Image (cartoon, rainbow, N blue to C red; front, side):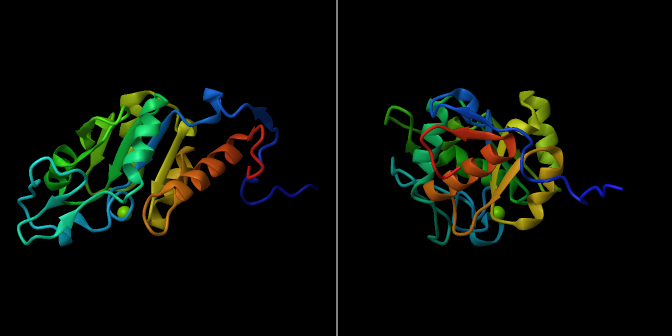
Length: 204
Ligand SMILES: [Mg+2]
């Protein structure tokens, strides 16, 4: 009798090799958590409203007590690269500070695709912010975008949110905030689950 393994093998049954500029070598949607993924704080405990921006200052807001809120340094470039590729970009956060998080995204200024300064909010096609299992956030993201879960790559700093992988989403657990090295690791993980190798790229 052949015993079935308790979990499906992470190795795909078949591999296909794509060129590095093939759109199929990239997920159609990339979703980010907020706290300790895009910024270095818990917005519900570390930030006291109101938030304000000092003039047209880029990637910096200050709260009532003078604490600063900003994206990790490589985040704006990552968002702009995704936007340039036509990727759907989402937020999935379980913070209870819903209005404050929305306000931060609307106030924060960052360099856009062509270098012009834009509101961070303009990068995001779908924003789901409320306390709940992130399964619910992804149900909503799927409902609103119609993008299959298998085409979603998710970055988050909390391992409990790996439960989203039961939907078919690929989650990459990050350590010290979002940056290009984490992007590369997450993309490699998504490609591996999809059975995608990229020509000329030895790391996956
Ligand atoms: Mg977080």
